[in-house]
Length: 377
Ligand SMILES: Nc1ncnc2c1ncn2[C@@H]1O[C@H](COP(=O)(O)OP(=O)(O)OP(=O)(O)O)[C@@H](O)[C@H]1O
Ligand SMILES: [Mg+2]
Image 1 (cartoon, rainbow, N blue to C red):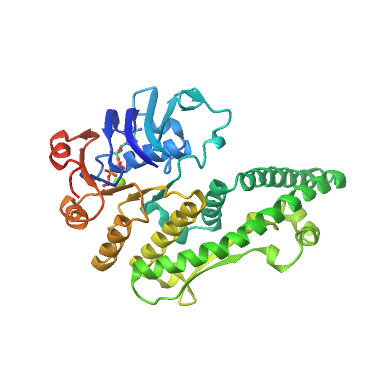
Image 2 (tube, helix red, strand yellow; image 1 turned 90 degrees about the vertical axis):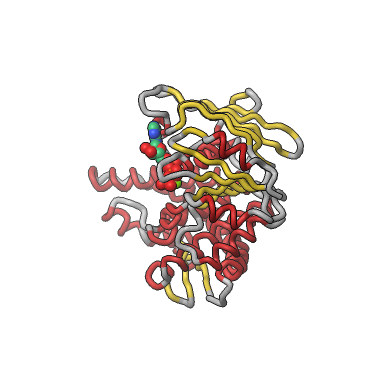
């Protein structure tokens, strides 16, 4: 599966752009602020119906305009898939596959698997547990539609339970029947989510440790440990036990919405003890594990989007990573970098087709583009 063509209208800093891509490695180069990352984000939109960076669709319309359009043509199992995404200010997003609207955007998720690796992913190590839950949830959801439904139902019940707790605090009016309904829903859905997260973590950790060793080239022992209150007992009992406390604090203190993953290197938390480069290797390995997990599931490599990945990694790690993504395990890859010479050195003479596309302030340098061409085998 690969993206062969994209066209943009008023998307972020692009007024109008049409580009053809290689099924191999596509590199976007240009100065800071030229629009390299924006192009990756447009590709992300076509797969996930949303931006990787900015959840407010309207803010992705070129300033001063009222509408953006992203169109892409994918080759999927030899068939052409035409994807259309448009956001009009004041209207809801339009998303079409082969000219047909979807009933629900979630139906599109998983059709065209994409994995983005970006500097903002350092949040996975640096930020709170919500970021890690979102990361895990987005992977399992792409591979398992029931998981996504359970998650939506769980979060709805959690919201209602919290509203009931708040109302008790304000009115001292305890509605036991209502509370049991929300507890029942949270328990049923929570147990499913817990089971799937537990078995996912086992498979994922194995992939992750192998990839980390390949990238770093050293025997650093790394780990991901699933932490959940549900590991300590039956969810129903835990929820009942927590009630008095929940009534006081006015929210639900127990459940899978508190789950987290502890990232370790040599048995110490990565956040505190790993260097910046080691943290970067850790994050790349997490994302490549996501790549292989989805590849195994869909039986085809997802499109890989690598944003500024070569900064902060030492030369050896960069070469190893470039070698890896040029190999046959990977399909189409998009890479951004400010350093054209580095890209040429890394990717010429590899097995895969590669093309460098130079961008200046949202405009394509056609001369550079055609000069480089597709022919570097
Ligand atoms: N809605 C918008 N309208 C106009 N311009 C926008 C909009 N959103 C973002 N931009 C502009 O896009 C540019 C950033 O593009 P992008 O992040 O793709 O740059 P980049 O080439 O990846 O740069 P870097 O090398 O620094 O990562 C900025 O100049 C920003 O102001
Ligand atoms: Mg960028």
